[in-house]
Length: 236
Figure 1: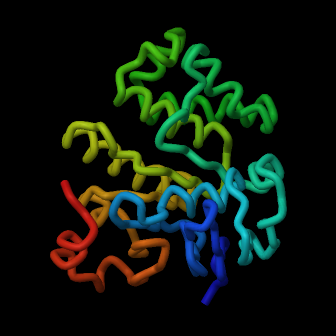
Figure 2: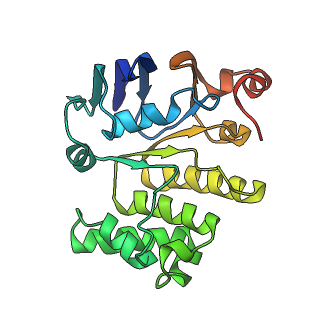
């Protein structure tokens, strides 16, 4: 079996005397969608931010594409192909939609940049209509689309998406998750998303249950009792 493109082992993060992550083990394979589920305060955001490099881990290893990256700065991790789409602060608020995408694609050639942004507009036609509009004037749903578009325009190998369904109406959540599945099918990217919405079970290949900074389970979605996971970890 192929090796995971991302493997986290023994990851520990502390805020003062409080351990947010306690020796976490986590992995993701190429071209799969991995869900991280758990209640508020479980450590989901901390795990994603640690992988991306915006939080320093006290202990543990992070390997990406067979390279140890846990001591690399965030920009070097980004250049290797890791992109975090945070729950908040995920767009450049005073830039236009078009400029947001152009800045995100800056590490690519002009030809590739054009191709990436065209794909974002194909995926989210409303962003093409709003391309001249300032990002902070978009609706909440449109800003979520732009945040995903920024991740796509970056041409990252793996997208880490933190709680994408927060604040969205149920129909928009369904549409967003369908779009994430299409992105995986179209681009062969790996998508890791933290979630509390039950609909993540419809798109994830595998789930990790995170609680109080510890992994409680890891299982393929097809083998999971959805009712048990829903009762323990999910809403929605």
